[in-house]
Image 1 (cartoon, rainbow, N blue to C red):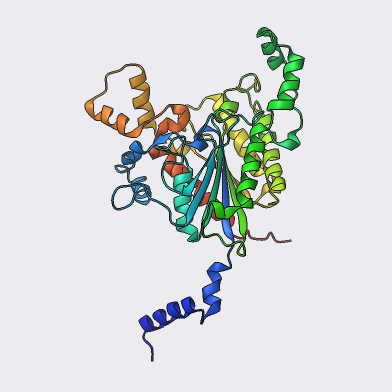
Image 2 (image 1 turned 120 degrees about the vertical axis):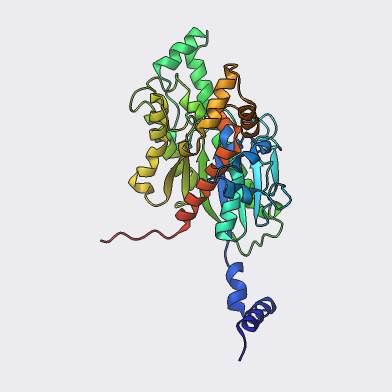
Length: 382
């Protein structure tokens, strides 16, 4: 009678030799899972690796840091996750420079920075335990109302506030409207979809071991954007009133529909990263209304079970934000406070302070939400 250890050894050897094809081919039969990450500067990621240490002293984030680093202290390199990223290199307008390789730190806005892709990939690899491809398309300072405008939204109709502003600048409103609708609107939606198609047409260029016979699955999309729409008082003149960002909600719903249609993935799971800058205390009316507008598409009946909104405000760090605010006012900080500020903050508040202690849990939250969307949804009783 074989011992348990002998049986396990036999099973592994048999699988490798092809004696048990059912076991050997089970993993190989799965298509490569592809996840698209898109948005503006916070999807790019302005979090310097120098802020990693700040996760160590908080019991909520210390376990995440262990996943982000190898035993030697260097950033973790995923062995089953590859990434193709555009929008972080070059001028970000006419050139679409690709950066690719195994996922690790350095695929943020610069080679010393990360965005949510880092911990998203780490935790997707941990949960799925199979090869993954991330296609990241992110350009800083881009809005949804124009730059990422989805095709089904049609030509933009410019409100009185915009027309008045153009006139005040000495710009012909008629010509400017034509220029926007013919040259500018939707440019980055097109850059995004074109790059995704380019990668999917030759996956082996990014994932060396990819087997075309195995195929791929567009398994999910993460949208992390919004700052430029949030602060655009011309496009959203009623932003301090309920419903002031309704157009954003409509555009985002169209965006989801169009992405699924254009990439031939009608049920592709979709995660909306809801703006969380400034956290949850003393939230300004415009921010509260914008967060509601961002999350709204997830509640539409047509998106039930395959679109989810993930709030990022809970991951904001009030202590780091307060230290940065005091330093900005030239208030004297204690040596310990200066140490925490230097170790934890690398950018402005609009970039989540450039803090790994904030961004790392956000990427993890996106991954956890995406994993849930991968699971079969329960059928409603008739």
